Image (cartoon, rainbow, N blue to C red; front, side):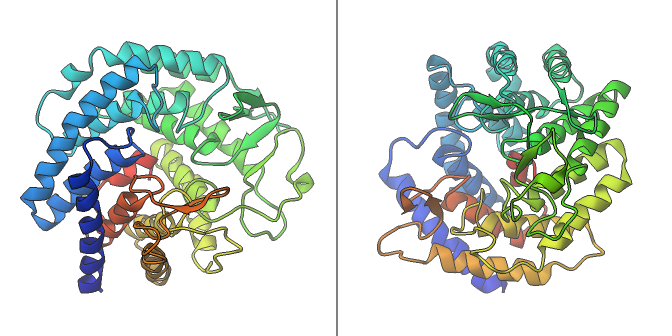
Length: 401
């Protein structure tokens, strides 16, 4: 297995090298080419003791610093494509000992911008992890040893913005970023955009400052989601979205997809994070239930898997099973990991004559397209395969996994 895996990773690196040599700049942002290539080169260099990859990663750090300046200029502070994500990445790279300069000094002027952005987004009900206030909060937690006034103020503001479900538990209504619109009474179960990400990031805050008020909020907001677990057999244990004002019996969907962004795997990650932080074994048990329920799934159509990307594709699914095989020694997810690894490899080689990155990325309107980025592209796939060689590498922290 390892020999074939190394062959596939070498093939991915060759394509990424081609891009690196032919481009002077990269699609900006943590979740696009810039962040993906940087992480891939650093971890490839670490695992294979490859100084050339480490050098390329270091050169890309200079692009990240320039990217932060450009993001500030254009008022883009999103975690996905803007200054919050790139700033988070610099702090993460320092923690992983890939960069040795004083990152906090380099980012000192950025904190106030990102704090103001977080408050603005909360005021318009945008709690989105990838594109809103929660990603900004996550920026402040990275590398921190305790909370600061920025974190405390953001959390206080968040706590005041909850609504109550039909069961009188706190939730944050779903917000559609592309529409700039809040959906009243809608509870969003996506780790990418919904309540699972909010409680997951708040659990990181709790580990920095174990206040009783935050523990109660974490417990109640997590329990709010559990109230809407399906009571009849569906394709998933939890919905994609549901009305917070009606019981789950009124939800007529067939269930959720399989993926990082939405579905039971993301719920499992979130429940495990909160359960670990506040020492709630029930939450951790339900988390494992989500993973175990998903492990036998194989049908690509039923589970809405069209590509290999980390966000909603096979590599993300594979990585989550790989992560939980590491966290839960009592379970054996090797068959699921092997299946999704094979699907991933098959997809990145599909239509290579037409798409250099194969079927790494899919768009509902455009179909397949070339993408070398982290979230939906080849560098994210490469990182997922690297984790099969060394499951201890931490790139999954980018997406709370």
